[in-house]
Amino acid sequence: MGMIRLRVREFAAQKGWTIKEVSDRSGVVYSTLRTYARSPGLETVDFTAIQKLARTFDVMIEDLVEVVRE
Image 1 (spheres, rainbow, N blue to C red):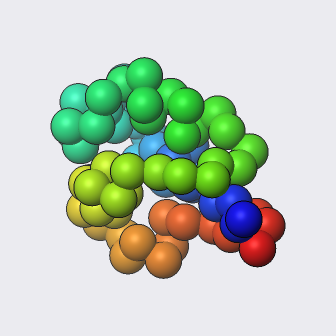
Image 2 (cartoon, rainbow, N blue to C red):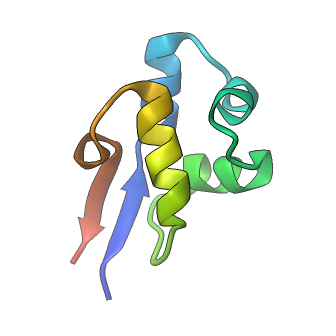
């Protein structure tokens, strides 16, 4: 099964935001967002959360998601 990593920390740093600020701005629950930001690879993620994060960072979903293992 493939694994992905969400580039949450990188995009938050570019904006000068903390993970908590990203949570507040995106509506993604902080604990979920913290897991996404810390994980080197995830097997499953909430697609709605990915959409919200991409919209918040003003990037395409493809820019936010990195495939770490196929």
